[in-house]
Length: 316
Ligand code: HMG
Ligand code: MG
Image (tube, rainbow, N blue to C red):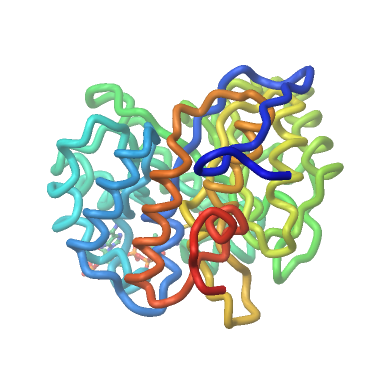
């Protein structure tokens, strides 16, 4: 079908979906943490500025983690002051009190802890068991809420499949979700870290969480697109009432030339679908595509997003 001007889908609403979706943009954090080469701080700052200019309202900026564990984000102290004037929410990841101290010292108002549904990934990512990680987060969440009511997101990785343990049992995921909420997290983000989930699994997990008393309004979804299922999984989540969706501009993350897990659901692909469904996101798709094309030039390779490719003249 020919699309008008810049190229926008024909809006045809479908029943049973939220009227508005908040996109939690993770390209500058989840995307850039996976880049082989470290992106210069000034480029990251400009990237985040451009993202803010597209109408995105939540732009995850960086992580205050151990710089040796994630060298790509070791410049968090330099980066954050360069963007903190932007009129958008700029969440940052903090694994422990040391990370929280660093983030609060720079005036961060939204932080995220990140747990795992599986023991293998908890060990690999945090050097802790699942329960030890929760114990590490407890003072982070209570201090964040106590000291000026900082908003806390709780990520939960490996909600569907784990590279060491295979499929992850739903009750295991529900238990850690409940624990994060009981710590005081304001919202949760359900991560398909390696992108193996399919829509039926998403529906089943969300139903189990509802049954366990977790309000759908507190849930976001975070799909990596390894097997091309991220958009289908997102639609399944929207059908269950989820209205917060994580995505990464240009589908950043991973490397298209490597066999490993790829990046997150591309924000452009998400915006295309949501616009087509008549769901408001407040995002200017043309500006977003231009931002991802600009970033792709800095990274030296084209964006893997189908929508970016369709709407730009990038070489594939
Ligand atoms: P550890 O080695 O167990 O740390 O790492 P520790 O608590 O034993 O401390 C050792 C040293 O590190 C100490 O220094 C600490 O001060 C220092 P020393 O006393 O030896 O000089 N240290 C820190 N320094 C700076 N900032 C800090 C910090 N913490 C300790 N925050 C730790 C434990 C949690 C620190 C480490 O495992 C870590 O940094 N992990 C981060 C891993 C990460 O960032 N992964 C990517 C994000 S998660 C993700 O991408 C998934 C997600 O997208 C959702 C999905 O897709 O599923 C969110
Ligand atoms: Mg992720």
